Length: 443
Image 1 (cartoon, helix red, strand yellow):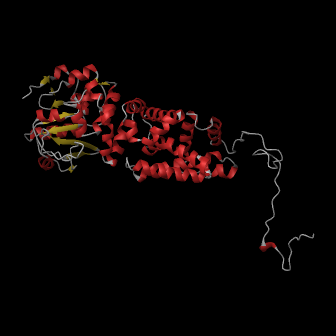
Image 2 (cartoon, one colour):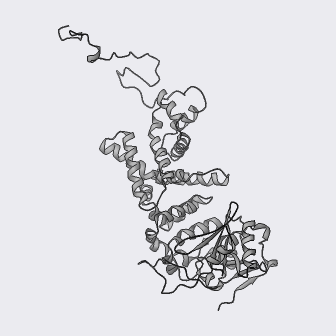
Image 3 (cartoon, rainbow, N blue to C red):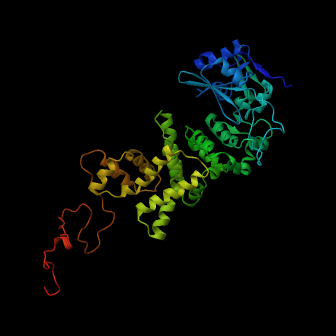
């Protein structure tokens, strides 16, 4: 048995005033019912690091059915490992039973990923089942001390993210830990321990074994954050981004503008989150998949002679179909993504009627913001972005600057020329008088 380090209340910074009311209610209810109850994981880690946690998790020796008996608002979720969600108002506290050690009896797939994990254990066993040392710190509601089995406090003070146990084995148990390592390290401004980072490039293809729906959520966590750009760079460095977005990774390798666009979009996302401005996952995923969309559009136009609108629709469908095989993007996001993409060629059409209709499109604002990012990356003309910016400021559309001189003998001249155009009379049978009112060769 490993003797833990116990840090008394006087020697750490966590106060009950920093813990949400719902979490405190759950902790005290479990304690008063005779169970062990600890706040654990990211909540403890973030408070010790001086950050405000997004949520709080609790570990207990009470089994799920026993937790459910104490809280009428409790709901049991999960198959691989049953979790209790206890609701107080808008707050949901996640409660898990101490997990037991991994044994040969655990069901695994051919890559070593654990498929079923409802084996319960002790506090010590639960600590060594945690992924990283900084996540294996327990706040004891009985005396307000911190319990540390894995030297997590020392790693927290050193600024290091370190896996508990053998890194390759732990990644094989759950490959998503590779993404979590990047996310937590960048969130805290920490570095990955050498032994924690070393196997990731070789094991990155294991992400292909993860359910596509789970990967959608994990990408949101790692890239829809204040640390989006740093996480993007680290994902690429470790070979993880290629596994998540192979089409985008290939486009980035082929065209520097694609890299600039993705990095610019992620920087924009990070800045919006810092300002507490809303960020839509549809916009984020549209940006992450735009490089292969535009590459395919160009190919369809240049090689197969497709009209830009037709090429846009086809490219969107092809890229999205391939992406969905890896990451399950819900329709409530994939439909706006298509609209944002397919509106991009329409920004080139600036004549009165078409431009005014585009300004009233429900998805105009998102598509316009997308255009600004494209111009910033050098993938769309800056003049085009400026024109659409001006078009939103007044009743009249701004003039369109000539991009090339009109061809000799061109009757129409530059777009917006003042010379009136003659209206053609429609011919055809409907306008001909009985007996032959049309012109003949002899006239």
